Structures are given as structure tokens and as C-alpha cells.
Amino acid sequence: MSTQDDSLRPDLTTEVRVKVPLPLVIPLVSLAVIGLVAYGFAQVLLAVPKEAATMLAMVAAANVMGAFAYAALRPRMQPVTMAELGVIVLYPVIIGIAIAQFGFGAEAHGHDTAAGETHGAGAAGEGAAPSGPTTAVVATGLVFDVETLVLEAKKDTSIEFTNEDSAPHNIAIYEDDSASGEAIFEGEQISASSTTYEFKAPPAGEYYFQCDVHPDMNGEVLSE
Image: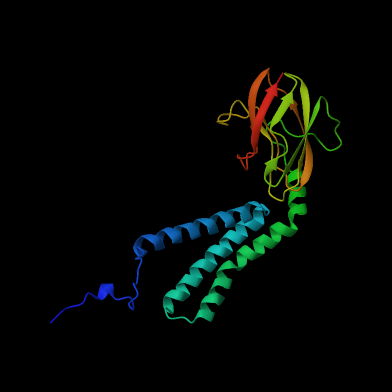
């Protein structure tokens, strides 16, 4: 009796199976999703007034805990129920996006901040005329519109600062980019408003400025 190798038969198709290491892929995908959600929610919190950000964070945390508790009690929920659960978890984020997009409460928040006490060397009082050279700086989209501030060494100077974001910003000047120690000048934080900082420029040299709320917003100071 002769035998025939099935592998040589043209009528048979070859099936190729790729085995995915799920114990490795699932945790990595989960971490990536969690990271993206956390980053997105952090950006929402930074873009809304402080009081609203605190409330949104508390509501979101309570919703997540409640949703997962409910899921643990009913492990075999229908897909519709899971969709509803997702809406419950995400609606604080949706509300935060709406607040950030339309600027609800930003005007009042900016007025409250402008009415507060000045920090460090302080800001100019209402109606006060600049006592020296003036530099204009605008913050929009979590970015300053200038990368270098040029000051006249040891002279009275002014910075006309406009914050177009609903998130609070300020301008603070330090010895270097470590931003350690006491600030040479620390302006008050404002939201969706403008102010004029008045202070005495430091001695000639190179310095560093940043927003204390968002240190990624920074640049170089040249005092000449």
C-alpha cells in the first residue's frame, strides 16, 4: 500500500495562525488608554476655573468608583447597560470640555483674581501709568507669544500681560531655569483678563521667566 503526503495536495489550503500574547498586549493597551484619558482630563481641568476644576475632579472620581462598583455587582451586564455606564463615567469630562470651550465662569474668575493681593513685587494699581519701558506679553493656548524678554538693567519697567486663556497664568522671573529660591519678580495670576506688572529690572545678565502655574510656558530674560 502506498501513502500520499497530504501537504502536496493542491486542494488543501494552508492555515496560518498568529498567536498574540494577550497577557502582554492587554495590559499595555490598557495603560495606553488610561494614560490618554488621564492626560485629556488633566488638560480639561487646566482649562477651567479652579473652583470648577476641583468640583469636576471630585464628581469624576465618584462616578468612576460608583460605575465600577455597579459593574462588580452585575458582571454579566448587557452591552446597552455598559454604554450607559460609559456615559455616567464620562459626563463630567463632557461638562468640563463645554466649560473650557465656552468659558463659563472665566470672566468672574478673572475679576476675582485681579482684585486679589499682588505677589512679590506686585502689579500696577488700577489706572496707574507705567513708570518705565513697557513690554507686551500675551498668553494664549497655554503658550507665551514671546520667547525672550529684554529689560533695561536696574530700571523701572512694566510688562503689559494679557491672558486670553480661561486657565490662570502669570509671569515670574528667576535667576535660572531651575526656578529655585526666591523669585526676582512674581506677578499675580490672572485668567481671561489683562494686567500691568511694574517692577525694577534686575542687574545686567541673563535670567529666566515662566508661568508658575504652567512651567512649560517659559523663556529667556535679557537685562541689558
